[in-house]
Amino acid sequence: GRGGRGGREREGKEKEARSWDGGPAPAKLDFSSDKGAGARAAVKVYEGGRVDLDQAFGVGAAPPAEGTTSFLGGTLSKLVGGGPVTAEAMAPVLKALLDRLVEKNVAQEVGAKVIDAVGASLVGASLPTFGSLASTVKAAMAEALGRVLTPSRRVDLLHDISTARGGKRPYVVVFVGVNGVGKSTSLSKVAYYIKSNGFVPLLCACDTFRSGAVEQLRVHAQALDVPLFQKGYGNDAAQIAADGIAHAQAMGYDAVLVDTAGRMQDNEPLMRALAKLVHVNSPDLVLFVGEALAGNDAVDQVTGFNA
Image (cartoon, rainbow, N blue to C red; front, side):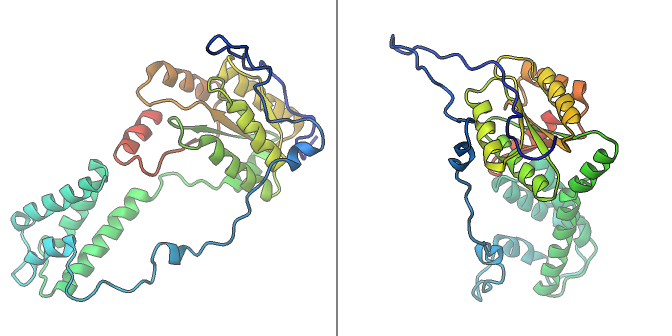
């Protein structure tokens, strides 16, 4: 009952072909063949070389040439050499720093926390040299960013899956997010990680809206050689997830990774449908997948999906 996907995919309603510009409707919409031994062989899995992240991101690169001054250094340098720094002297400097962070697409709330930490570390301090100022500011910013980026809940996926398996049930993860951010791809990467550590994940196709969503997940399942549960398009996503979880438990799979349709956080009907899926199935983990270039809107997205 465990292992590869061969013969275990559940079939469902197919996407209906449409006629465009008065021409005949195409006879075939699904080009992700799952028939025969050659199906998986036709899927090419990229095996890239090792990437040196230190080199890619400039870690260990030469420092800026002497005589150059960053915005941060130029703004804070006026605090050097006087007596203890006062809150009044810090106010315009901190405002300029906050404005600079917001210009760089840092969320207002995050920028305010960083600036408050910098201000708290500097008020009352005596800064005889620029070196002492720089080290104080860097330490304060590192501490503030550490607080912002440290999650309030620890997630140990492999340990949690193992615990759920001990309880004779699958561990359920639901992937959510706005349109086009890579939920299905991220889900498949997590599936690869789970399988590589000796567990069997089931992919559950609950994006019943976007054309090609089920076929896309099928290709990922073929490439990873893991089972897929799907019931096609136009059905209730919450019920498909419930059926998929029940199927995983019956087959003895270790985890269920639920793919959902993308939606904007301010689309109330679609957000209610997502809330229903989560409420009905009580997943162990809900993962928000966001776009790294979203900037300030990422905070609004997370807030909306976390409501």
